[in-house]
Length: 118
Length: 329
Image (cartoon, rainbow over all chains, first blue to last red; front, side):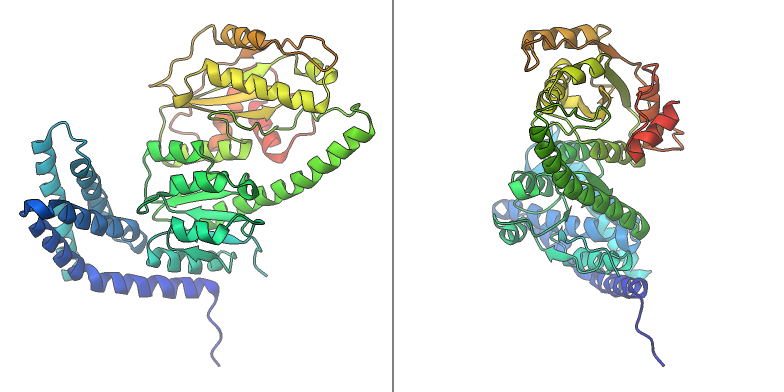
């Protein structure tokens, strides 16, 4: 006879469902980020591109560590921070910040690719 | 049967909200309500009677962040003291300080551990029940005071909650703030106790209302004397204030007690019978939490109180005060 799942079991089931959904979305996140990066080539769409990258990075940063993807969460957090500096002209060394942005971006994207393969 | 505290969780990530619902149910706080952003949350709150006993707020949300939302909630009379727990990936000290400065009572970083979440929610519930009880007790006490023509004394050991003083935290929020710094390994903070040594005499001469005003004025003097941007402080009870400050960004002068004394003298405080209310102030030593504070925040608070040299007189302490007093003995 089946018994009702306990609250703890329901939590674990919810966690597993969200984790699976996140894993299935990793490639989509990667392609979206690449799409937003492409926009940075267009002067008129740079802000849109940065906002898109920031939003995706924020989303990944918020949920990834909870689901066990700690490195991804950290990479997303760094990228979000650097995009913030670029977007708000807070950087005292814009070229250096731009290089840091590319480094963080590539770190996150390769993290997403590796997580898909894993 | 689960806990009956009505909780509103606010986060712009639907996955987090679903996880929170399931997690809170798993730790015996079922039925949490959710809002996908500050606008929806504020619309739910309206301006009527309080509907919620506790808030769980993410910080990083578009348009309005969780810290601003916390401030907006605090400005509503119905939610002036409601527990507000920040649940966020933002673990930088700057965010922690900003959150507590606008009235957050606790702080949990993501990824959250479900057992830790349960612990924080039980502490929030305890605070909620105390506030509910205090509101009733305060009303009863005020009526009793009126009936006794002001002869009733305000309990000396009560950790009076001062209002509208920058960087003042109620005792529980202060403990949670110290615990949050400990979990985040922010060890650049020092703690110091400031004591009004003749508090009993002041209490004896004051009406209960005057005593609360006096404690508020002393708190204002502390706030003015120290660099408020790098400081939080609380009233422990029995005339003792406890301050925590960033020792890298804030220096404490050797004549701090004299500075406070001067500020209070400038206020010209008097009791309702016209007698001057002159506090005698002494400061304890600055203590640092160290890397091995195995007893957590209570250890460093206890050491700060112990550095004054004499523990509070009254044996009738609140449980957390008694625990701190044991460390200071």
